[in-house]
Length: 366
Image (cartoon, rainbow, N blue to C red; front, side, top):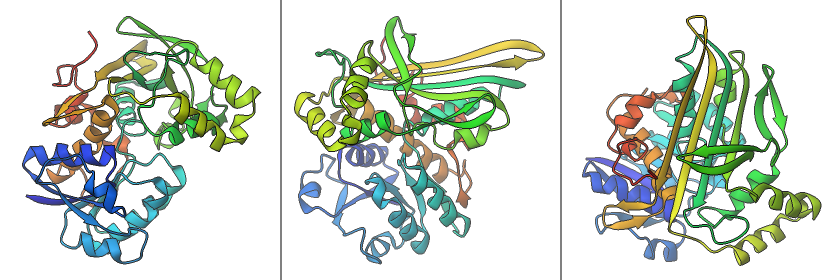
């Protein structure tokens, strides 16, 4: 049984711990600085906890001694510290961060490490990159790679068509920061909340628009190979117009603290959510135009004895699958491993990756 440390006692950390614990192959310890958060941890009885001030040099290293891997479900501000501790302790490292600067530093740490370092193992960035790259490899030449993800309420109850399904700080950030893309073969920064388009998945109508942070390292992997590459967030129709009014016309992008207060006050959390995923790739194959499309809609469901949201399930499934592939020897055991290096079919066949599979155990919209 492999010893795993999960840093972060929030909802995602709890879901990861339960998912791994339920498999019977991993002994999990959840680490957090907060004794209150650890006491409130919603997991099975076999999951252990340890209070640790992760930011303190040497503290996490002691917890990691003799362990197989550390999985970070902590705020991005702790990413580098956790990666440094993993390198010092000689354990494998995986995280969920969307932060580009942190990931660059993780890559530098990985260059001198004797274990594997695999950042951005969540949904977007994460699984979306695995799906996009696996489709792109089927083409002789690439024209467009379009990646879209949405975390939404199953039953919208306001004009925004939105409810809090994950970090409100993350939502505000992705609506305000410049977005990476490839435009006409060149790396570019494009504006958030722009390039609105209509999308239909499983017969449901949505809209999609530019947001930051979802591409991970895919632009670098496909630069020089594709003409256009972009990432857009999926929402119910009308959402982008309202957010542009709030953030642009009323200048709340310069008062993100106020925007965050409004979100927290006005939007209630929901446990009945869904994650919508769409990847579309166009190009040529055997000299002829070709197109591939991958789509999934995953609903909230159960992990072990507990109800979990769709965003919890998809995020935890992503990092748990990559860990499982690493443990089985299906991934490199040393150095930096990008999401684009992971095969989609192998991922979907994994016991944890089945949450994303068309015939997986998690309920899907018909």
